[in-house]
Image (cartoon, rainbow, N blue to C red; front, top):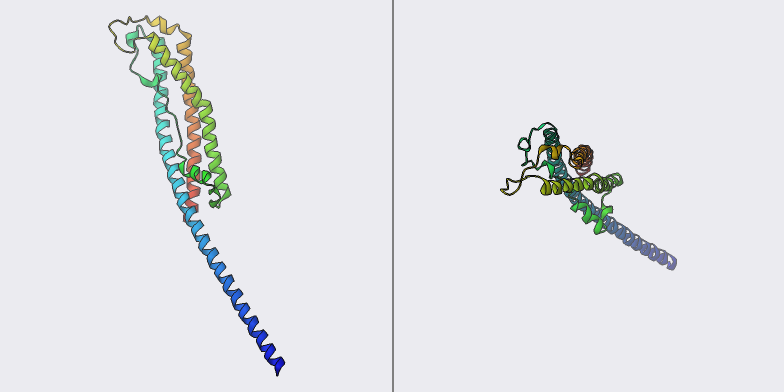
Length: 225
């Protein structure tokens, strides 16, 4: 009789422990599920912000590529005018293509916020994270290469014209003969090389834009899945 009571007590105690353990496991599961939902919500919010940044990049790149095409045409026109003109009056001193340097600076605020806050791991897709890192790294390489050279050439050309020609109709500024332009290797070479850099920039920015569009499509797929 006494043994039956002890056995019943043990079984009851074990049952209570089992129920407590099950309750704890269920609570942990619910908590993990809630945390997972919070993480997914943060990921979705961050991805939407990154997608918005990328769309802004794409729009800006399209504008710059179009402007670059116009600058290339104007520089080519100016180079031909210098070689074919009979006087400086045949040149177009108002053209800003000589000085204009449209440069691309990406909006990477959303991605930088994740990096600086140590929350980059909320992006579950490692391939997406790697593509974003490579995207911004590629832009930096372009900025330190072609874009840097373009700025230098444009400053050189600007300095040349400010010291050399009649950019504005100044009453005390004597016009130089067209031969002074035509025979100056610095001017002609600068215009030539700047145009070459403009073409390279168009190529670089076009590739960057295609990559941005690819990443944006990947993000939109992540958001919708």
